Structure formats: C-alpha cells, structure tokens
Image (cartoon, rainbow, N blue to C red; front, side, top):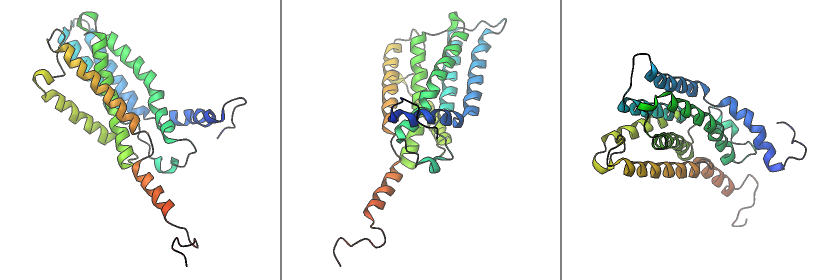
Length: 237
C-alpha cells in the first residue's frame, strides 16, 4: 500500500490507493463486449438505405439498455472477495468505488448509443434515458443484494438472470401497469413515473446492500460472544 500523500487526510489515503486496484479488477471483458454490442446495434440504424422508424429506434435503444444492464449485473464479481474482507477500508467505500468508476463511462456510452440513432427515429431522450438508468441501477442493486444477503463472490450470473426475469415480467404487464409504451401513448407519462419510482427504489436497495454481508456480521458476532481459550467463565469458577 503506498504511503499516505503529504497533506492528504488520513481518511482518504486508503480509498485513493484502492482506486487503481479496483479499476484493474472490474469486469472489463463483459462491460466491453456489452458496450460494443450496444454501439453496433445503434449504428445499425444508420446503414445506407435503411431508414428506421420511431418504433425501430425505440426498440433498439431499449434492447441496448438491457444489454448494458446485463453487463452491469457483473459489476460486483470478485473471486478474491473472501481475501479482501480484511482490507482496512469500510466495505461501503470499497463497494461504492465500483459503480463510481463505471458510472461516467456508462453515461458516455449511453450518450453515444442514443445519438447514433437518427433523430427522426429517436424517442424523447430524457424518457428513454430514465428507462436505461432504471435498468442499469436495478442490475447493480440485484448484484449488491446477492453479495449482502448471501456473500456471493460472483453474483453476476444470478443477478443477470434476475434482471432478465424482471424484463419478462415487465413485458407481461398490461393496461395502466404497462411500462414499455411508445411515445404518444396516453400512458407514456404515467409509465415513466413508474420508471422513476423503480429507479429510486433500486438506488435505495443498492445503498442498503453496500455494508458488510450478513453472513460475515453473524460470524463476527459469534466470535465476539465466544470466549477464547483460557478466558474466565462468565459464571465464575
């Protein structure tokens, strides 16, 4: 671990030192593959002789958002998690570094995907970006919940499957609960109020799941209650 920088607050030296370490262990292959696929899908709408309509543009962007979400489901995969639990940095900081490092790249990627779709076929940018953000944050929240509740070192596959199940459930919704409405639909505004609620709920779940996994807290509690060898009995001799 590098020495604390001169003048740097003691509380920030270790998190700063962790940044390059966390950067190296992020799931770049999965993120990169999803990024290339999303850009390719959007770029396909600009092929010569191909004039996409509004429904095609909307479908491409929603599929790209799902691809991005599936990649973000692997954000907390860390085969070495068992060996890094003793790092002298609180877990919310360690875990929070991952989405903090990826968020600017994800925003830049989504901006590129969005504007690769021709303007004539592009849905309202704010609304479709809200949908993409809700999908991405939900994926991260599912992975964080798996780590928090089960201590999974590699929660990505399970979180991705859960996200796909949620996507299927959204497809099956109907009536006023239907979220995948096209622009101009009478339920467009109401659907995006639900998308906003989903985004807030996913963000809160993610924040709640950043502390130490429950199995480790239970193990620590048992260790504290169990007296060591030679310790005096609480009931006397």
